[in-house]
Length: 148
Image 1 (cartoon, helix red, strand yellow):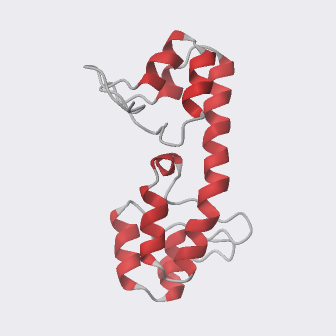
Image 2 (image 1 turned 45 degrees about the vertical axis):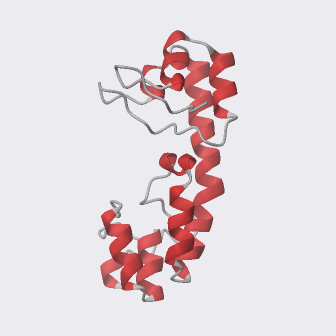
């Protein structure tokens, strides 16, 4: 069963369950490792955008926060080592769609792009830029990735 399968309007099962207010189904879908909460329908809406009920919004936001806390540190660590293959594997995870490519390390304010530049891996830098990394995000020392 493809939990990210779309209907004619681009809705996934998560969109439909969230819109219908089916917290039980939303919870079950979020337990699947292959669900992508960042998918948008033909109206450019994510499931959280059309969720009926604060409980469903809270569930999806909590799921996103958990994913960020699980994946982002590993992306930063792999980028700091210049390990492009590991970064690619992490970002290929369907759950990584919930991760902002410009996520900042809470301690340093650095993004994966900052780390890749410091590591000196030009291919990884290009890859992150192609994925939408913003070279103008400032870390806690007020440095952009370009200034490192």
